[in-house]
Image (cartoon, one colour):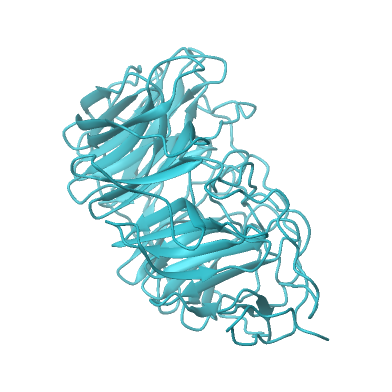
Length: 565
């Protein structure tokens, strides 16, 4: 059978492929909540927001069943399909469904060649060992506080009935440190509580149009900052000295524009500066914004335009225009790198991945994807790891790129790997993928759950694309990656039904689990399990769990919870 035609001056690609299974599945689900006075109503669905992917919750009362299958790809010589409705240069792919699930009982080696065609070959067949978490060893202290919210006294009982959160705690289990609840009254759509950051001795939570800082030592409110209008763009990133950037609207009502950029000191609870985001073109409509920064550069991407600003002063550095007719429509940033995802002004509107200088925006290398393919996510910018797929055929490849922009390897292993990112069409952006983490030369991906639990973490070698190991969460439980660093992955292991969860570290070498924090049984476990749309952080030996939207019906509902030693 014939190979697809090669672009000029590109090496031939190997052959041998199949096809990916049907429509995208949602991310893996979680144990159903038990009876809980602080549980949110399941019918209150969150709108698009930075901390969660819309209609693709990280937790769901009824976990979906993900079919088994195989990594499969189009037969050799079959034509690649153009991307109908591909974004025009400078414009995002609106309505992108980025929760692509890859079913792979038989692993085909995903190879994205250095040219513009996918080719797939080989079959690893390996089934890395599967250690399962067991045992217990805990962590650290506490926090708590409150915005324009009635959130109790920070003593750990949270609600008006003064429930003892640790009443059912068993021997060897750690503590629920405190719980903050809210009795706010808001619009029918609810009240957004999108952000959560831990900086030094402060955990910061957004509630509607305010930031609130809570002391991690005793949970008392340290400060509150009102930004006065809706937060329409934020990032989970912070500077080394505890600052972050948000974008808010310039007023109230349907005509308000998302163009007021603010640098916020999360330790002091103060605005450092406010600058207007410039309109980058005729189609730059500021409905919302995605943000990312590296060093002293903050990049702002909105529908129709991107631009970079100096973090220290708010001075505009460059707009997102690239040479050779390829216009970046979104950026990923961090670890000293800036990666642009651009739409090229060719007949097929092909996508190009670019390495950009953070100060000038000039690209140092570029990597062109095949016709019809786009980038779903950037798992890491340094090293560069991207997830690409064809929007129509659902063909998918996860590849690592070298410092020169050439392909290093394509990931291959059995498993249903859920993509849990926001994509271009939401303020989540291409990063902050809740089911992945990268550290050094290792990519960690979580599989979708099977029959309500027992998902796995699979560690991939970015140099070879092969799986190093895989470890299962255990019956009716799921692993959710929190962070990776220092040779280990830290994950949240959800509880089953009303059972408590755990914070577990997985060693980079073999995936052997070690329990860092054993969450308590009893009332605390029921409340823990009811955080259906949650933001999670594990810092300083403490686990912070918060909601991303309040019902705002004037009833007592949970906001932020902390666990520790």
